[in-house]
Image 1 (tube, rainbow over the protein chains, first blue to last red):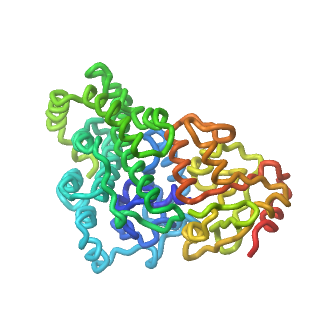
Image 2 (cartoon, helix red, strand yellow):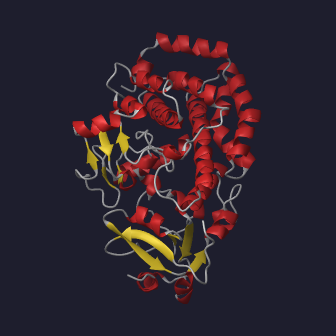
Image 3 (tube, rainbow over the protein chains, first blue to last red):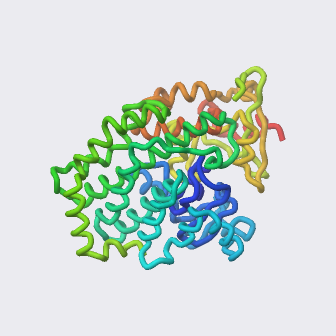
Length: 281
Length: 143
């Protein structure tokens, strides 16, 4: 049931199935997660699914688990002190890591997007994982509260800069025990991260479509199927093939859908409606 | 990963301490839905996930759970099907094949990733009469 756990939730930006730290952090409940594979809550937003599927599964999940606190996946009971903590000493340990420190600050600054912005300047794969996770959660929250589909456009624009990069995954970035050889684990983790970039961009296209946005020849809406088309075109779990497809197909499509002048225009509209940016707070 | 052999090697399952979850043979579920756990907790499935890795099973069992052990032969003796990791990887391509056919290539690939990561095998209870499933599960797994 690990896909239903906090490990696979966008609100826990420190982990994915194969990447990240041994413990997690829930930015919704402000708890260090000591047993994230066995915890969940009604706010779970799956990292591994595209927008529509993730939304459908979230609705099903919310019927089974309380959104009020982290709880046990096995029986839905509220997690105890051996499973989560919010003690200062544990938070201090989390803050000793640059990604952990930034994630811990999430929601404490005036605007949440500032914390996500700060992750841009922290090098490494784990910071990108955190930015993509929180970016998806932030944009989804803004849209669900009536904000504009453009609320996450800045974050997606930043993701574009890394879109064609081969993720540099160190052995220390990998989490958990696995029967898979180390080199293959790195390959699978790379595939997951590249796919997360595409899923974040696909979210933007999906929200633009739902908003019936007709600017720029509907090209942004076409981005909604980017991750799906990548999987269909590459057909296996090869990060090399996926990255080749991204460079050949996805990057040009993104640049055509959201050229710099269009991005600047959307930003101007966004600034004029500050509520969108604050929507996630 | 050393080569798993059906005739020689065990399968493990991490589950609750008080017993193994009982599948629902009549449930109509794609292999992709099962592996991705689509449909939410408590959804019914004719499949049961196992792994060739005891370490992986321990992750699923957690500190409050238990690792159970079986073999493909024990499952076969109770007429329970076995779909090996290699067979699953063969089915989880493109938009899936056979009982892994699915509408989303992305979800097929993600299921494939989980199968590979966790060295997953499925036991298939679809052909077992509903009133015999609990006994079959009890007899398949050694405590």
